[in-house]
Image (tube, rainbow, N blue to C red; front, side, top):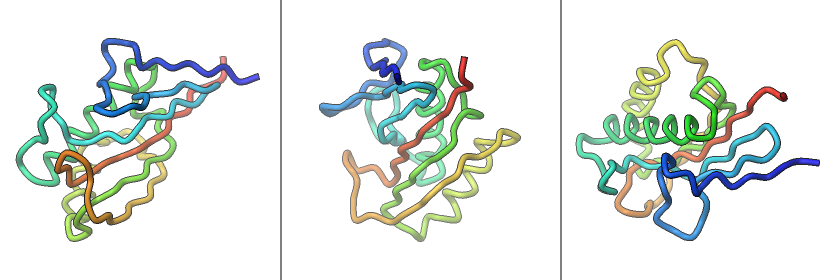
Length: 131
């Protein structure tokens, strides 16, 4: 039987601005809700898609850490861009952030708009080793 834990009450998790969980831990998989380039004050970071990508990945990393995981545990990411013309800059910032860490499987799509004026949102899943 799979144990499902809702770690969203953890204060170290970045809390969502809507009626959903930041993260769900089911068995050995952690499902993170869509993350964006919001700073600690809940504002979209300035500096374009590269800055938003870096902040988004930092938010993902912080939430993974709060769930007992790290970037190396990511197995899949779905990325939403409001301007597919930002793909090269997004990819560059992505590569810079992951560095030597194995990058997860990824799908990137263009969308018409995102909440809060974001230009990017990433939803992802991490897998932990079975105990």
